Structure formats: structure tokens, C-alpha cells
Length: 281
Image (cartoon, rainbow, N blue to C red; front, side, top):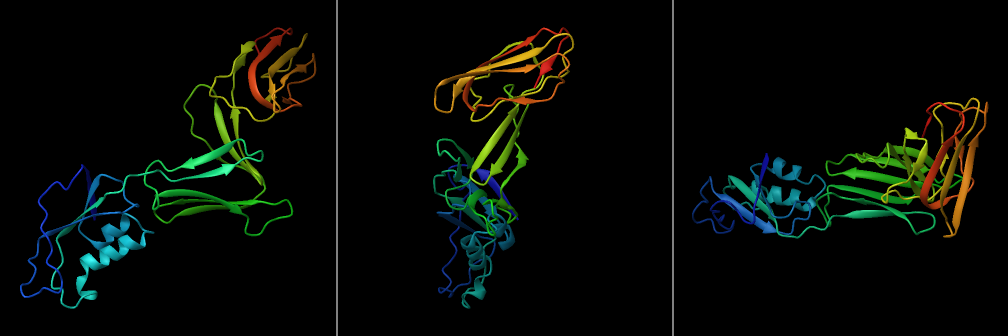
């Protein structure tokens, strides 16, 4: 079992365990051992109190060195016949500063990328990681292998990914209603969806990044008039670009997509000559 406490040092007097080969007097039981060193699996500046080898291994199931420390400390007789006792508990402190581990997946144009960063733990034994590599059995279209791993030994693998939505990004802002992360064989794409946009001028927030086409869907089909959506921004080459999507009278409410890809979108102007109060997605 392991417990933890924040602090810059060990919060109690630590007794030194007698070296194993100096056994003229048995080591008293009930004493405590402090280990301060480079333990990258552990959060820095935190004191962990461990009383069993199982508790120590649980701090880093994949960390070979922690497992070895647990065996040496809590089962010394297995490694040194002259050892006569073990400590009541071990205080473990990681003296390393932490740099969160991360992995970058680069887009096809190499100008944009998606970075997976560990919230804490690093720079070697971070608790979570994401790796991108060539597919194990690459299909005719080519593919990538994505592995998401956690510190408890559980991993999720997506192999030979050509294209497909694989997860939804948690987002609590107002710029978008939903976000979806999708992988292609040579890129990563985050798709934004903004619903219930009224007639008028919609100006995307500065945090909204664009790198593709714009798809718009009205909430209802126009009757007795038309809907239009004027998308204004810049193209992938940096030149000014604008396009008008039109839903004519009786033409239905199917989604329409711009023919050009946008690097930025400064505004989308929605107009309605059909009456009613449609909204747009």
C-alpha cells in the first residue's frame, strides 16, 4: 500500500537501515528508510510512503527499477543472506524536475500538427503516452499505427488506420459545439461543429483554426425564397478567397461544402429571403 504527501522534504525523522553485511547487531524492526533519487516515474517533490513491495510496484507497473528497489528493500534476505530484517516503511522521493512527455503527429503539409502531452509525470517514465508509427500490416492505401498507453499497463492500439473518427475531444468552450479527432494515413484532423447559428454574420473566434473545407447545413428547407452563406477568408496559399453556398426555393436542406479549402475564415454571412427563422450548422 502506498500513500503520498506533498512537500519539499521527508516529513518525519528517518532512521538509517544498517548495511546488510554489518550484522553483528540485528537491525531493529519498525524503522524507516528514505530513498531520494532519480525516479522519473514518480511526480517530483512528492513524498510517497510505501509499506509493501506491491505498493511500490503499483507506483510504476512498467518501471523495472522500482520493482527491483521493492524486492531489495522489502525482501532483503532473497538478495543478501546476512540481511536480518526489513524496514517498516520506505519514504520515496523523486528529486528530478519534471518535463511532461509528449509525442507529435505531423500533418501532411508538415505545417500543422497535433501534440499529445502528458499532464504530469515525465520525462522518461510518464504515466501516459501516444506513439505514431507505420502500420504493422500496411494496406494498399497505406496506414498508420497509433498506440495510446497508460501507466497501469493498459494500452489501446489502432493499427493500419486509413481514415476514421476515433475519439471525441472534450471541449467546454463556446467556439464550437463538438470536436472530433480523425486520423488519415498521412495526417491528423480535428473537425469542429458549431450548431444553431442564426441568420446574420458569424465571426469565428481567434482560437478557431482552419485547414480544410467548410460544410454548412440549414435546419430547414427554404420555401418562397432562398438561403445563402457567404464564406470569406484565405486559401491555403494565403490568397483571399470567398464562396457563396446557395439553397434555392424547393431545393431542400442538404449539407453543402465549399469547393476550396480555407486556411483562415474571417466571416460567414447567412442570408434568408424565404422567411422563417432557420439556423445553420
